[in-house]
Length: 321
Image (cartoon, rainbow, N blue to C red; front, side):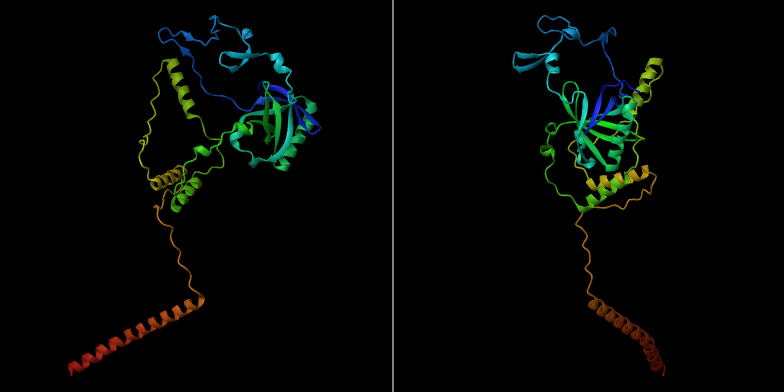
């Protein structure tokens, strides 16, 4: 099990569940150091006092809040520890809500909640079953790094997950970022929906970080003195300001998506235009009359066609006599 980041308890009404918080994710990003190009000397970041120029240790560094220019109010750890923080050692569930009511943009980090001792096994399983059967998620308050936070508890497989959430006032409004109103053709919308259908997947666990894999190959080759991997072909970039044929792009995208999935890549090209008008159905009485007229017309043409050869034959006989 990963090293616990925090220990405390879940407060579920009058039920207390001792837990350990462990990270639910791992960072596989490759990090680099800064170095001096001339002699490969390591470049390090040091904490230096801007007044006397001395390099300080962590024990010599304190916290402060700048209330005005050139005026900072110092705040000690002891003063912060005395601040009222009822959720300092507890994840207090305050409500249960539908999962769809939580905007994903509010979720930041994710953690697993592991039982802390055998005494926590039964109440832990009880909360997990309650969340599963109710099809709800729990909204909770908890404190971390001297700050009260908002959290979301849900079930993933057999474990309870804690998602750290941002407070409502921390989410910026996207109103000013939305594009102005624009007209869309119904055929364009229909093709876009077809594109979403052709790209639909039930499982996304197969995606990999291809950039990291290529970077690992590059570093391995350089460390072993081998030839560097061939560079990937650069994709053609759209020229800035170039007017895009939206329907052509949609048609090509649907075709490409179907080819990728091994499906029939035949795409019936659609061009923007006015919605096709549907023909109105004629009333039953008019339909019957129209059919009757059509039958009579067809019957009259057939009779005339039959009589015409007989008239020609009679005319030939008269000419011969």
